Length: 308
Image (cartoon, rainbow, N blue to C red; front, side, top):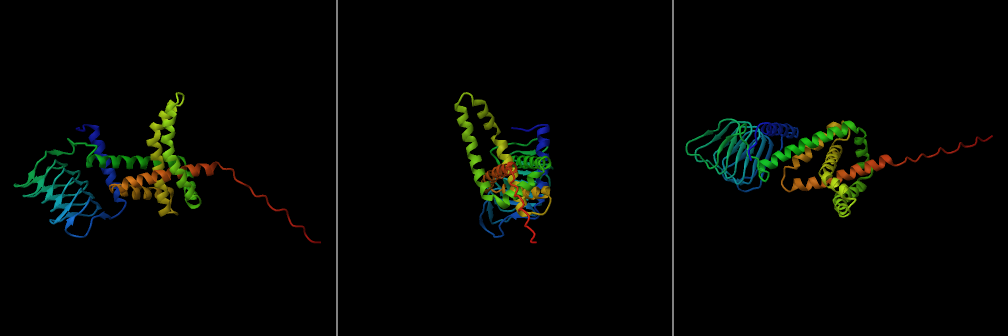
């Protein structure tokens, strides 16, 4: 499905925001220094993506820096910000949001070539798909890598906005999360497991009764927001585990960078989302219960009689 008008501008804006966000993590890359052999996805945050002539990888991604493909990429190649040179083989699509693209003689691209600037394609290079410009056409396939990346950026921006709003309008949340982590960590995990799995079960049971149908529907529709709130609170909790003495906003941003960078790893990212959502719901539930619990005031002992 082709994206037009404001939709294309939104994707470009989200992509830029994603590059800025992950660049906060500093130089880091998920790239093996070994040579030869087959490897999994290659994800580079900032630096250089180099696939040597004797290497074969699945998906290749770099957010900030140049990419040089001399070997084979079985699936797609994505470059957010950097020049790209392809001398080997990319079986899937090549998507370059910002940067010059050169396809050398003898190189082969099995899918589409989507770039911002006009690519330089040498004689003898093979492009089996179509050539298009990011500004005029972007194929959004929710089952493909590009769709997953756009979803990652959108969810990251959503968690960022939600977290900033929670910290701004509930400033005591930071103190409550720190106290819960320090004194009630086990309780928060137990509450989180119960809420995460019992909420959908309870909503389904409500749908069985006539009078409970509206409430059951409301809970079902709200589950995505509820789980995202839990994930956001857990993001702040992770930041507080790393930085205990900084401001609550800095701690939240550090936790956001950690969790969202890890979310890029296939399978691991989904598992971390589940664990973070469970723990975040528990943190929030225990913090609310602790805030409402009556404080016990210990009476001062009577004064000791003064001996005469």
